[in-house]
Image (cartoon, rainbow, N blue to C red; front, side, top):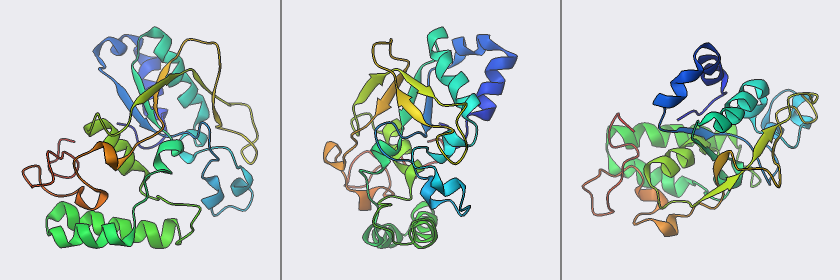
Length: 215
């Protein structure tokens, strides 16, 4: 699962394209397909003018484009964009629930969520979920969390950084190259957002996220 830029994956594919045959799938947290981007949170007053791009794709759009293009050569791609993460809000109630669980994973998760809610989102209602990567992890670990929508995605590699560099957009009438998760919901699962870091043998169900080091 890639929760940053696609730089390393693109470089690996450049060095040896045949590695595609050994990759079961690449899950990416990144992009904003049908919703605004998140650069409005950037501290740079120029970059935050970019209203359409998500940071992980924006930071190296050429790499992202190469990874998306590799799908035509057989690389299975799965994307959790802001379209999905915006629909899953984590609150201070979740923070307190995780902390009360009392496991090492839940303790550090509660600390990280506290930082995200305080510093990253600044309690901004337009940033409902600063824990983007957690939603991507759930789409990977819990197949029923969100149905995948096949789309053909491309990346703007020529735009100005403050305008539309890194914009991820769907191209109609072309074969899909990415399975995109757009509508995740805890209603599809047997546990709530506050239960995420309970152990896998807890009453909330068979949870993978945060219970071991192999997720």
